[in-house]
Structure formats: structure tokens, C-alpha cells
Image (cartoon, rainbow, N blue to C red; front, top):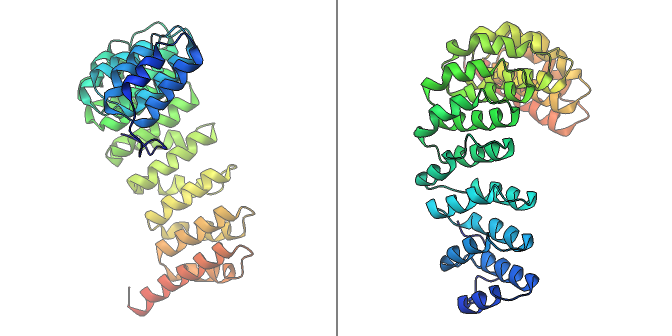
Length: 326
């Protein structure tokens, strides 16, 4: 996980770094850790872990950030301990480095903290566990969906989304009705691995949600799953007050090849938001029906060059199908 570094062509003297780390000058110790981190020196892991116990928060911060380049249980344990640091910047840096862990065995020290009293620690732990994709985290992640803190619930949903386990589906469906808008949005996004018929009720509920971010997530989900049963609701969503929702609904209807959506999509070609006009033009091209041609003909003179380009391309697709007898 080493990153490019201005030190990569230089031979780093570990003994010199270690000597500087023993300095009484906190700035000298901090600079030594920064150089060690930048070098991605394989032998630097132990020293960076030791630096997490330095009395100066700047040194600890440099060490916590530098450990993002390393992996394994020892690093995971050190970063898990650093989540409890009294300095919030050090704790945040440790949480960010946890997200770079890739070794599955690193999950063990993190799982020991899923019940920690501090919500920020619990949330950081779930962020770190997400990319590890360890099946053993499933029960704890499901339990975390009942956490009192919405940030923890949202991060636990992220871990479940990466696992893509069918036995997590009931818990994720429950989270789609969570009181917190961000949790509901995350839950809908996490359902993209599920069969369309299993999530249809959650999808309808999401499209009718009072918060546009949730409605947007539901429209994205319908497009990913190609949920034909949601076609009518998606057409209705084209007139949503939030153009972002209408944009995602248009994309979903294009994937569904929804002929019934052509008039509503055509109407969006005069919408003031150019991104929405582009999506509508693209969706009409995906649907590939001659009924869309009159709408697209007007869009070839759109003031936005991208809309004009997509409209011409969509016309080409439709006429090619007509010519080929499609």
C-alpha cells in the first residue's frame, strides 16, 4: 500500500530516524515520523506504532496517519487503541488509517470495540471493518443497526453492503425505515445486491419518502435492479420537486426501456437544468422507440452542447433500429 514519495529514490537511515525519535524536541520527533511515513519503509511499522504513545499529539498524529501504509493485526490493534486517544485529531487520523486495512485478520481487534461507549469510536470501527469484508462481522453489524447513534448505524450498513449476504437482507430492509434520513438512504443503496422482488416494498416507500435524498437513492436502486414493477412510480418521480430525483428516475426508466415514460421524458427536454435534459435525452435513446423522435428533434438545437450531442446520438440509435427492423 506504499504511496509515491519524494523519498522513494533515497535510502532512508532507520537508525538516524530512531535517534531523532529519541530527541527531547517534539518537532524533531514529529518530522522523523513524517519522513518515516513518507518513505513507506517496510521496517518502519514498529517505530510508527511506538510513536502512537508519544506524549506530543503532533507526533502521535503523524504516526497514526503514517500507519495507513501498513497492514496486519499489529497495526490494526495499534490503530484501534489510537481511536481512544484524548486528542480528537489523532483519533480521526487513526480512524482514517483503519479504512486502509486489507488483511482479514485485522478484524479481530476492531470487533473488540464495536460496543465501546463512545459513538465516534464505534462508527470508526465499522468504517474500518467495511473493506475487510469478513463474514464473522455479520452478527455484530446487524446488532449495530439498533445502535442509538445514527452515524454508527450508517457505518454498519456500509459493512453489510460490502458483505452482500442474503441473511442480512431483513435487517437492511428494516433500516430502510430508520428514523434518520442518512440511514434510510444508506440502507436503500445497500440493497443493490438483493433480488428486485424482495425489495419492491422498500423501493416504493423510498420513492415516496419525505426527503429527496432518500427518493434519489430509491430511484438509483430501481435502475440498478431494473425493477419493472416500479415503472409507474418512477414515471411519477420524473415530476419530483428535486431535479436530482427526476434525473435518477430518468436513468432508471431508460434501463427499463419504458415506452410509457416517453412523453414524460420528452417533457423534461425543456427543463431548466441541463443535466436533467441530458439524462432524459439519453434515456429516450436507451428506450429506442420511434415515438421519442419528435421530442429529440427539438433537443438537437439545445443551448447545451452535451444535450445536443446526446440527442443526436439517441436519434441515431432509434433510426438504426428502425432501419434494421428492430
